[in-house]
Structure formats: C-alpha cells, structure tokens
Image 1 (cartoon, rainbow, N blue to C red):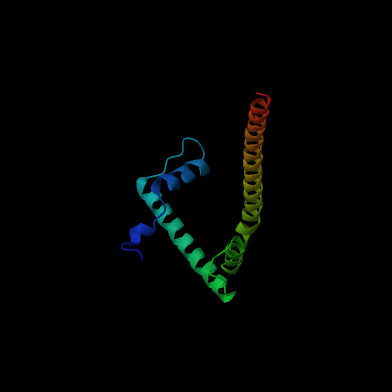
Image 2 (tube, one colour):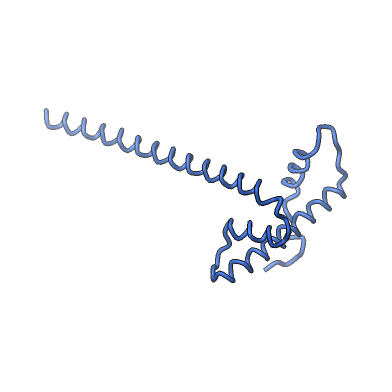
Length: 128
C-alpha cells in the first residue's frame, strides 16, 4: 500500500496554486503554513474517501461515486460544501458531454469526408 505517510500528501504545486487563487494578490504564505495546509487537505481527502468507501460498501458497491462523496460530506457535517460541489459537478458533466459530442461530430465528419473521397475515386475508376 503506502510505504511512507508523506506519499499520501497532495502535490505541493497544486496546493500552492490553490492557496494563491484563494488569497488576494500580494498576500504571502510561509513555507510552513503551505505545508500545514497541504497536510490538512490530504487528511481531509483521506477522511472523506474513507467515509465514502464505507457508504459505498454498505450499498454493496465496489466503486465510490459522486453521490457517495456528497453523502459522506453530509454525514461528516460539511453540508455547506454539498450545494457548490453539486453545481460544479453538473457543470463538469455538461462540459464533458459537450466535449464528447463535439468529438463524435468531428470524427463522423472525418469519416463522411473520407467516404465521399472514396466514392469519387470509385466513380472516376468506373468512368475510365
């Protein structure tokens, strides 16, 4: 599983970027504070994942879902996170669906173009 507890920490670059985005411009955070925030975030993620996994197992599921995460947040008394996360999840799903639909349309158009070229080649060969 995990050899060292530090292996469970979130990447420092990601945590640093989140801190920077959350604070007003010009605000500074010490290296020790960044490390503490990173550790706290990692512990929170592990705690939430553990609770979500327990909820999923109670439903005889092997995979945790977004619904399990949202239920775990409620159970852990982080209800204030549920509405914003639900909204963000809907936005993400909508964007992913649009991207998938766009990819399907692009690939279908490419196949149609290729088929059209092949048909023209066949007609040219028949005429010859």
